[in-house]
Amino acid sequence: MKRTISVLGINFLSGVFIAHSFPTLQDSVRIQKVNPADSTLRALHNSVPAAQQKEIAGCISQFGRYYQNIRSSKGQYLDFISSLLIKYNLPDELKLIAVIESHLETTCTSEAGAAGIWQLMPDIARDNNLALAPIDDRQDVYKSSFVALKLVTELYKRFKNDLLVVAAYNCGPGRVNSAITQAKSTDYWAVHAYLPKETQFHIIKYLAASTVFYNLPCGKYLALKQEGDAFRLPVKKKSERYATIQITSSFRETAILKYLHTDAASFRKLNPQLNTTLDRSGQYQLKLSDADMLVFLSKKYDILKASITDQP
Image (cartoon, rainbow, N blue to C red):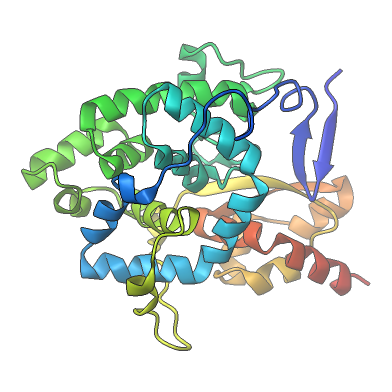
């Protein structure tokens, strides 16, 4: 019988994670954290145009602390992915694909049906012998990582550029090839304008996360932050991706709304009868835009505390 453990509304299926022993940096598998000076990261940051530097500054300002929390709390997953990246001879920083796709939340799902830390689609799962039921193997960090990095390897062989690989993982290699043709260039920043807005947003998050995860100097970004007026991420409503996460009856709508960058009407359109459903069944699949989900996950303990305070 499948047993579900719920922590702050995030479900962990017993036997999915604890069945695997993830290697750590102290294990016999040789895992070396990349020295950014010896990687492509510094070159990537040095090539960022001025307009996108402001967007990265906004992302660091808003979510830098949350990225730090992921780095410190998800070390076991990150070390395991690093070991696979060595195996596949890929740059260590490509593990940040999972960070920006799902924030390393195993139960994260998208409106399109993607799931798990790598946001694998059902057809990809089936093609790679991952079960979708009764237990969804895409939520298994061990199994899904092998499949995801197989895909990343294929993309890296094709594009040979971190940013193009991240873009192709998000919107598909066909879209990236089309953008390259339109731009008449394989330089990412020449291609950038021809990609979907969601994918452009992904690249900004990838570069912001890499600054935090690898302790890169970010002075040129933070210098762009105006006092009392942090730059905001350029989220386009029509191209937003939505993610869902299960919450418990301890959470309340009014408390959630205090922390999100959305209005009550838009929130209720995505989450009708939230309080009523929570009161009746004790749980709810909260649906938020990618940007709001990042805020929710970074502030969930504050939101939970406010929810409990607000309840009669």
